[in-house]
Image (cartoon, rainbow, N blue to C red):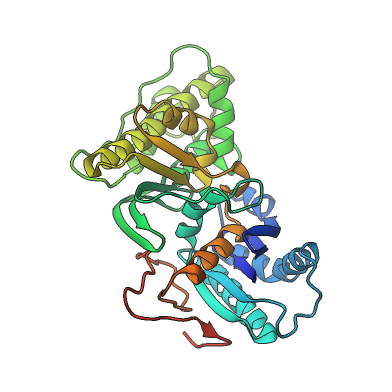
Length: 362
């Protein structure tokens, strides 16, 4: 079976084809140059860019997979798309594209959870789905828009233990980078600066929030802002004042250390509380080298990361979500776009549930 998938939740437009557990194509168009001038994602511009680029991304993915266009009946086994969480306008572009592909090919349509995609992306190995996750495990989904801990008991059987109460980890990286005059996206910029830091830097708080699996990174971001105001003056940002390069690097390392220590400790504590030895980490922030090194240093845990090519948003992970659903004896399926999608599970229990073909109004 060939599965055609679309990903348009934020600022990457992507289409992919997965066949028999082998990734035939994964075409991704990044909007980073578009949003960099604003220091973050502008939702309306993101939606327009998805609408403009999705025909070309789809054409590239189909061509690389050897699928002739226009799509015809029987050429595709299933069509999948991210129905949430994400930007409302961006999600609608992906859904409409998937509906059109489903209508043309006669293939059933499957709506999947974008965050589950980040978890299952850990199964890719060199373009094949050979590294199946072993359940139960603890999942940390850490990206620009989300930071969550799940108890994953099997495919589609996920229980959310904790979420961020304000800024996600990746969002905090972006905002700290902006305060320091570094380019968007902030994660790679902060990591690069931190790697070159020498000497002792400031000590920022660790928002561990004892007694809960939730996260809160807004206070850490504010601590960085206060540090800069103390050094440069309260009007430092509006006045365009910046730290010397060496001091900026130390601030980046201090902030990154605090964020990484918080993520690792809370994840490990949650795993110990449930008696779990396996941890899977997915999402854009999971590409951070310091985070990977800190998890690798954990004793008594088997930690799995996705390959860096699949950390950021991509349609390959959406296709894999659809594949695991199709392999299941039964699953719930919704085509409704859900920007604030909260429940990542899709197990239908004893009820036999199929997929929906063609168009459906939400």
